[in-house]
Length: 423
Ligand code: NIG
Image (cartoon, rainbow, N blue to C red; front, side, top):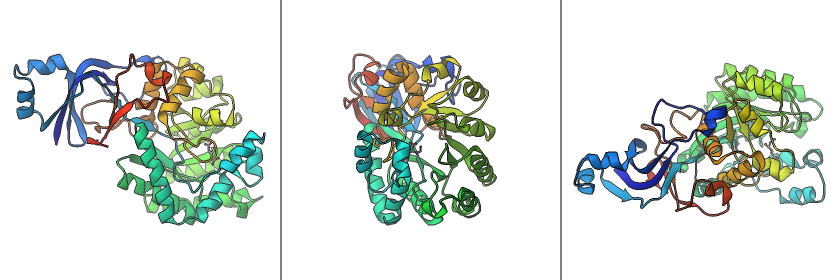
């Protein structure tokens, strides 16, 4: 089916010149917009776009000509804004149940680490997941996937990490993969066996790392269940040495690195991530000049997760200094039951403005093209470009683009198109 969308008020994040895979530093202020535009799609992909003026020049007969020669359907956008679907590059969306009791403990004053040390946290989710069938896990996760689609997200990364044994890690990854088949979302999967030390290995982390390397990675790679491998590199979780061993083993099986880095301390997670050419290092609340310099010279995306910083009431990552140091920054939801129980990229955009002091242009780059890069998807997602997947959101009439992070709880996304289909 060929469709042409005409009279678009603003077509946002277009790639008019050479292909852009990510935007770094000052370039994060670049946001190409065509005013009064058209967008043509052919099946699942974008076939063309430009200004209405160019389109009108094709024929004096307008709509009739386009219908005959360019499209099966002409959709009049009546001045609405179109922008790419959001690319959420860090989530733990596959989980069982919920953890609101820990939320109450937190309100009563317990820290994230104290809750974890009492058997709450990730280990609590692991127990819940262990007691949940694959079918039920899929049902619960599917509901969350549908919810985030309704917020305007069209591509997502989903991690394992609440299994913590071979069977349950595989169960999670299978469910994540299924979500990519039964929903319109593009899904990339990440194996995060090293998310926490399971109780059966208490006091013997090395043995668990051996299990990850010798028993989990080979099976997950053989079944093609993951695109990436990740480690929670933090005191009380996994050391830099553990991370090094795990990323090295994953790399041998073709799994590109990601790292939960520097969330609660200067953990060395950035250093080991860059050493393994990680596609992204995520969190980064505790980073400074040394980390910025390493990231600047690397192909690694700095992915920030303001939702969990907000929920855990911690210090925000130094986003402004990162951008001023020339880094590429992506923003993701970190949707998970413990530290970010929401998957709404619009809320992240509001937080990015308020807490990171990012401009609207920087934020849009961070949630589209840079998010796509952090999932290895920037050749197919994250901007309006010929040949890219036709994933876009129609935004209702707003006074300016700044209204998006400003009015972040308003349901501004009026229509969602994924793979050329209206959802
Ligand atoms: O990114 N930091 C590690 N993992 C998650 C939290 C997961 C949980 O508490 O269940 C995070 O914040």
